[in-house]
Amino acid sequence: MRILLTNDDGIQAEGLYALYQGLRDVAELIVVAPRGERSACSHSITLSDPLKIETINRDGQFYGYGISGTPVDCVKLAVSAILESGPDMVISGINWGLNTGVHILYSGTVSAAAEAAMLGIPAMAVSLAPVDPALFTPCAQFVRKLALTVLDQGLPSGTLLNINVPSFKGDQVPEVAITKQARCSLRDCFHRRTDPRNNVYYWLANEEMIPEEEEGGDVETVLQGKISITPIRLDLTDHQFMDELRAWPILDLGKK
Image (cartoon, rainbow, N blue to C red):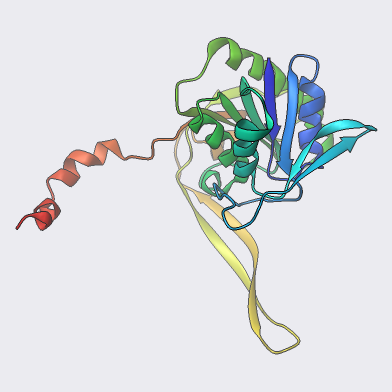
């Protein structure tokens, strides 16, 4: 069994290493991750620059490959060029910070898993509430069990699992809930500043996520102290709206 590990926090991130440590005795692991942090890069890929690859050692031994591009670049490059044969699974994480609600759309962590799903590979994205780095290890043990279950049960084509883990105490792994992506909005806060040459610039200082009140959403579930597992489909079509849209006079615009 071969598992490809990646992330958007960079190949030196402790969450990725904890995942590596937790899975190394149950699978052949290949680590291909960005050389530096690429948070919130969504599903972007590198087109105008070459992708540079660097061999990374850790604890005196080969650990993986650091890539100059994005998390999605890492998955594409690993599957198409680095590996002689494709992996049985791709796991992206463990991200330092949750990826729930609308943040799923911005997340490089989730997008790496989404790229794997596009390639027909079972995939998971894993994120942990940013409280105590020591929780990476027990979180990785939970992911280990889940990964083995996914390999046994399989996932529907074009579907990935988005896992969000709240802060918890030691080895007391929280209850698990199957959730949906919460509907929510963001309130952005930008600081307006001036550089030494009197040019105005803005710095994104804070994003406050405002979820709608609803049962079974990923945001609410994590706030309740439960692990949220959300199955995400790559098909973004609003199927329920299609019939209503067909009734619009817009369809007559193409007629002579």
